[in-house]
Image (cartoon, rainbow, N blue to C red):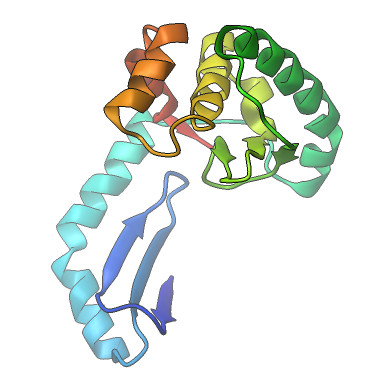
Length: 171
């Protein structure tokens, strides 16, 4: 897919885990220039696609019906695990939302709202626990500094290994 973006200054190419290749360019760029850019990145794109094909695990679902069917179950699960981990952290959070996100497992807003992907229920318990603890820690440190990772490791000592395995999953 080729996209022209008004605020973009550079051409970029991104390979998604599901095999989509998206190229973005400044709005003023010609399609010929975009084509030349993509050809110059051809080897890198092929390598990225083969890497994803050989290492990724695709999770079930993704459609609206699947999301609606599992949203309630995911909400119960997340609230239960939040309560479990928050006994350790004792952080204050506001709203908890369950969403059908394409590229994120979770997020935390400056207002203390926590968002989680409904597919969290299809993960291994330690992976889901890591995601929930990770977002809880953002309530204290809204970044990925050393302080943040120290907070995460207090509850999830093997977070690096879990995080590495999560990267092999396609949402």
